[in-house]
Length: 201
Image (cartoon, rainbow, N blue to C red; front, side, top):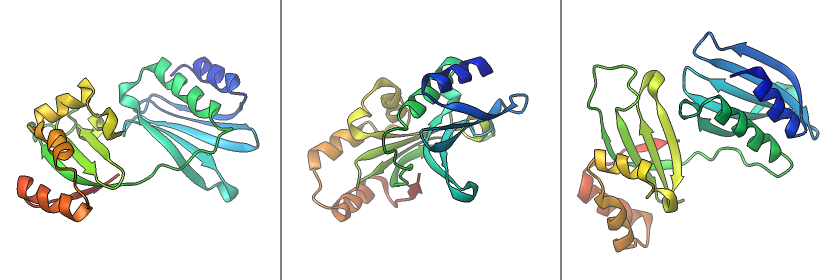
């Protein structure tokens, strides 16, 4: 990512760049440290794993993860815009990334011989407590993942994954049965898909 784009995003948010490490020759990796509003933040583009990550620096250099996005779906302008969004919101109380437990609804790998596929395997998980879906595609350097509120999962990009895994029935099944407890949900799901696995994310 061109440094001027990052610098412009930081300045527009009212922050100052204190350190910039450019390792784009190595899987497009770079990191940025900024100061402002009484805090220090780090933004890291980990190209090998495909994540753009946002941290707040605490005492003794400890880092608290505030958010992360799948960077392989972004171009240079998108990454600069995401940095601006994060930093512009720093005057508001940001919450660390919440780790949820997702029941795996379906998972399939059509190209097991490809170690860095961006399309397979595909995985869909569902968190009953928070009514969230987890979508994973690919492996190795091609891995992409997103946690999405159930109210947003009917967008075309997510419906494509439901169709590819042949579980388009799940959303209507979930809405129709209206489970009164997680136990009732898991028992009914086991009847549909067999034994359950849980994925933490």
